[in-house]
Image 1 (cartoon, protein in one colour):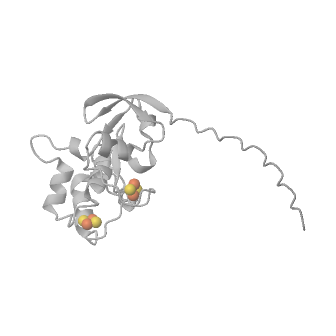
Image 2: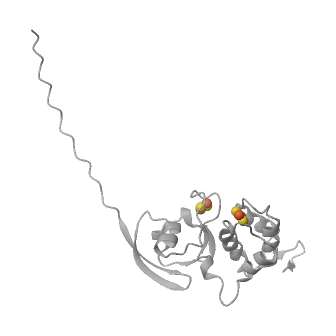
Image 3: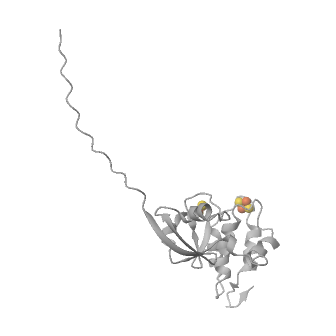
Length: 182
Ligand code: FES
Ligand code: FES
């Protein structure tokens, strides 16, 4: 009869320490209102806007910086809110599509309306915010800058003609001689 050796005692497993999620306090301005709250340090600005502030006009498509649907203005510059941490926005000013129209459509929104620059509308808030950055510039923009800005947003519906016309109505484009088209 074979006598089995007793199994060697297993070495004790060191418990893995799971750190609690870090939180940060943020104070920022969103569409002219002060927001002061705690956020998880890894919370994306797109999720903060949509889920914490119910500003669902900022759309989320690719979630990796490729489609531009989530574009908002951060201190006047167009940024991808899916690549921006909410905690990094403390002390800064965020504008979303909800912050544009007052008593009537914002001029960029009006231009999209005038030129039929949308179909399903999923990409539209991102395009409008990107173009608004240029619309608010004091200097006229070059043709290349306008095209570069439009390249950052993807539309699956329109074929881009109406969007381009809307952008040209919204932005002062410098001509080669230095004048500008409005
Ligand atoms: S959802 Fe942010 S770039 Fe596509
Ligand atoms: S209008 Fe549908 S994705 Fe652009």
